[in-house]
Length: 190
Image 1 (cartoon, one colour):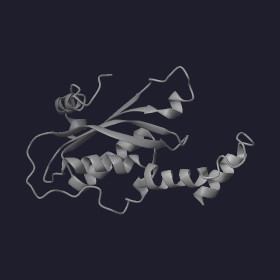
Image 2 (cartoon, one colour):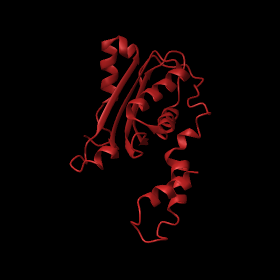
Image 3 (cartoon, one colour):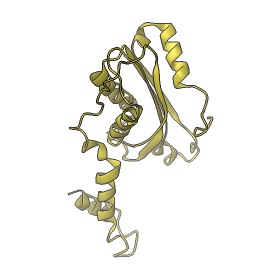
Image 4 (cartoon, one colour):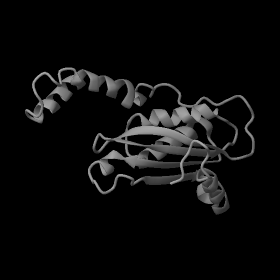
């Protein structure tokens, strides 16, 4: 069905390319969208975070520099950037790679950046019930940079706090400092 829709989309543009040039395009586009760009829907039934058996420390945990690519549900164009996810455990702890997978699964769905933050935090809270959680996303949106030629470097930043980080300003500042920490070797300064 997706392949037919893509074929109709291309035909709707009119005779912009010679006949036969785009013969394989509908199949290739459908495969890319189903297998990669929107693969987060296939993983919807799997648990996104499985708590570890270890006793959690009484310290903040932050995983930064998580690269993601998502698709804007308004324009069907990609946005990509980095995520930083942090939490203060209560009784459950997650592996660091599980936090990376959590971001990846939610990003690989039709999204807007604000909802992506919320989805990540919802899943984190559901699986771990932390005392507090936070998510910082910074992304470049092709729906903005491609459509407005003068804005190729524009980036959007969203920051969301829950639990203790909403309630206690000192804890919020502490978490914000960790989420925004100095760039590591693999990160670039803005």
